[in-house]
Image (cartoon, rainbow, N blue to C red; front, side, top):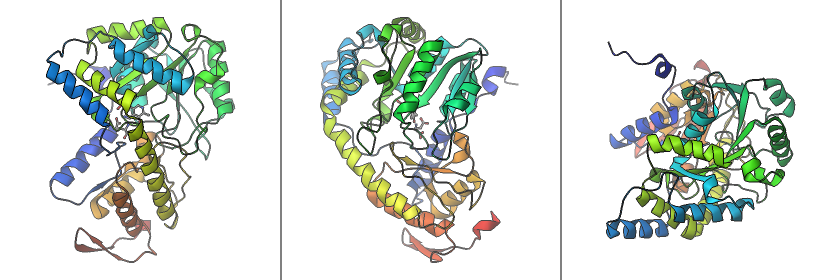
Amino acid sequence: MFNLSHHIQQIQSSPTLALNETARQLHASGAAVINLGIGEPLNPCPEAAIRMARAKLESGQVKYSPVSGDSTFKEAVQKYTVDLYGRTPKLENITVTVGAKQALFNLFQVLLDPGDEVLIFTPYWVSYPEMIKLARGVPVKVATNEAFIPDMESILEAITGKTKAILLNSPNNPSAAIYPPELVAALVDLCESRKIYLIMDDIYNQLVFEPGEWVPGYVFTSHPINKSHLVVVNGISKTYGMTGFRIGWAIGATPVIRAMNKIQSHSTSGVSILLQEAALGALTGGAETVRELQTLIRTNRDILVRELRKIKGLRIQEPAGTFYCFPDLQEISGDSEKLANLLLEKAYVATVPGSAFGADGFLRLSYAGSTEEIIEGAARIRWALDPDSPPDIVIAGETHRRTWEIDRL
Ligand code: PMP
Ligand code: GLU
């Protein structure tokens, strides 16, 4: 009856956002849910962001923004890029978008012709394949090794005459790996020499546990931004805990950015000037918030990894960055959806099954919430999955007994 396009019927909704909705509803219905599913810091956003947004709102001057972004905010992005990347983009090399998500979405729209291929590394963030398909492109999944790092040989094998771009996310969602500088250097060289776009999704670039481990792609190119095939995507959602403000940006060669602006001019128009003002507050006065988040996630990571390692059959690699960990539960069950459902229904802990990221047998746990929640969440997961742990647990004042055999899953 409803004749939707063939195209949209090929696209899946975002499983991470759907899961967040389920966890939210469960929570609203009174269940003591701990949400380790969504990748969202729970700390309050920088005070400077609120102050500046409030002043803007009170001025009553909340009008259309220039399509590519407000110039004062773009200057702040420029400074951020100089400070963190050692590169100075011109303002025309920057476009401000509705989150990093829209930057990536617009980018695929302007780069891809039907059938063009984009290399993504497994495990990959849930939205990459769907965004590429929405632009009528083809996601080509390249496997990684045990440490979730791709090797050059597999990358070269996956490249065809139709390869238009390689998408790299480091620190990585969901694996929490950071790609070694030698690999990034080799990819930058490869892409510059073959005129393949190298899209670097750097949204977790400040959430790194060992300083210096993450090295930006710009370090390895001698090409000026306007001659380079490197496009860097970033945003304030993760670093400043400002997911709901929906501000991101892309930096690339002027023709690429202009083409993205064309899409923006006919779709969302310039991003809300009010929210850009808040983002300006974050970039100019939010350093303390970033430091606090860095401290919190280090504590949370250490606790969570230590506790998960006690679970029989679970293997976990130490996260190098982000606020995720990606334990391997294949010895417990190859069906990560079943495990995630079990954890949600019995232990009231939301996690994301690895299958959503192209890696069944794994679970993604996000630890950007409070340390109390992480301790409680880890205890419940251990109770639900480890047959050697005590059979009873108290959740929100009620005793629950483990009545299932995990190997029967
Ligand atoms: N890239 C990655 C790898 C992500 O995990 C996210 C999470 N939302 C995004 C991009 C998009 O972020 P946002 O649109 O909130 O800026
Ligand atoms: N990127 C976050 C995650 O992976 C937020 C949800 C989303 O946008 O997919 O959980």
